[in-house]
Image (cartoon, rainbow, N blue to C red; front, side):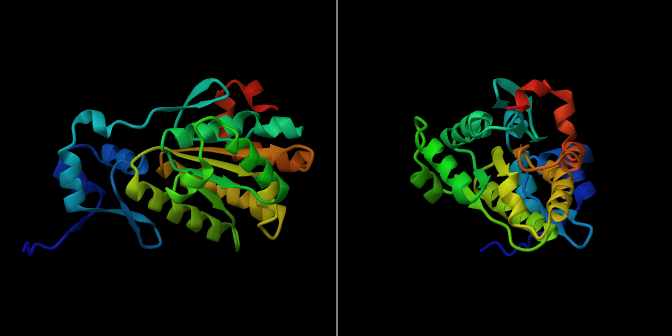
Amino acid sequence: MDSRKTRLLNTAEAARLLRVSEASIRRWSDSGLLRVARIGRRRERRFNDSDLLAFGELPPSKRAPIGTVNVGGMAIPVPIHLAPLYSTDEGRLRLTVPFLAEGIRLGQPVFLVANGPVLATYLDALGAQAGVDLERAQKDGLFTLVAFEGDGSAAIAQFERLFGEALATRQTLIRLVGEMACVLTMFSSEDEMLRFEEAFEVMFRRYQIAAICQYDVRLFDGPSLLRMLKAHPDLFGLRSGTFFN
């Protein structure tokens, strides 16, 4: 029996072991390609030496980022955090249903935050998509419905747990859709929900994620939408008309 003890290495030590830059170590771990643990209040990275050695034996092609995701006919690099606006029930589904269905077909973990009639609409629309078996996808861990309890910090911790569990079995891209009118009902106030959005914008870039946070303009006022736009800077470098539905 092998009696060697597993060592946990910091970013600098991991870089020396693999003879690469620290930036490469951070990029691989943030994308989910290299398993990483977060410790302490500062969430510092720690790497299992056996994981590093196994990763070092992979061919270069296996260490590449996932690349891009198709949203509304555009190939968009990930990680990405988008916030489409819509004013009709039909507009709600135009981007997100194809986006989620494609993820399920590709075997990628898909998360949906919705409830009530909006959730029922999504389930009906996704179930009608060719090649999508929602019951099987849920059993296989490819389709997960998410609901929050507590404040924004608890929601961030919940997502970090869910993302970590997904990447533990699949080194791939994660897709997330949040219907923010539904998300609002899961928090104590609109301010708490928007503070969660601002925290998510910082947290999600540690992972290879394409996130779409949808806003029904019939239910949010101007100041809230302005604050939302500030929390989604990725929108400003893209063709904005795609995200107005």
